[in-house]
Image 1 (spheres, rainbow, N blue to C red):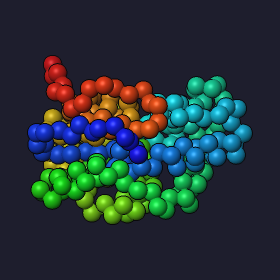
Image 2 (cartoon, rainbow, N blue to C red):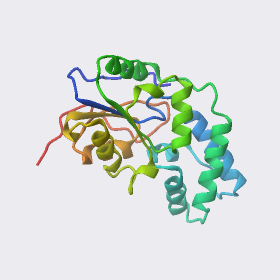
Image 3 (cartoon, rainbow, N blue to C red):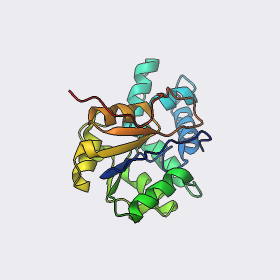
Image 4 (tube, helix red, strand yellow):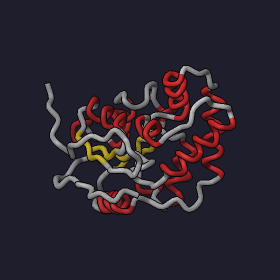
Length: 215
């Protein structure tokens, strides 16, 4: 759970888009453990670190394996590793708490009638389990996963689709993210964003919900 102050936007937006892992739900420790156990079982020639996983925050499981292969020059089977990792995660998913300040902010926006969406690198099954676990599934008008788009984060596709399903223009949305890939995707979609600090030592940006220059 993040200990730093989260700078929530003071102005109203027409639509609110939330990353899931590390943003709405404090699930990154279990993701990290699941990746390490799975990679060991496949004989990966490296030890995954917080820094490495953090730099890939927002990428889908298959893409994470591809990036690890590129980084370490190995040939782990992306589909098999991703599937086993997700299965391990789901088996141990019970009891994961929300990131309370973000979750309460989402509930407040929902109570005011604002449309909300989730744009996550997790698969649909994991996303559903996590949201049900914190009692938040009914808050979100749309839940976007990598299976719903041709390109995941840092491409803007997930954010454009979330805006479309909420019925909101992209430039009138704000994105909540704990990962650099997601923030790049939000910027590519022309959306403002709020950074959610995490205990993992990610490559973190410094600005908070600043206006984006449009050309």
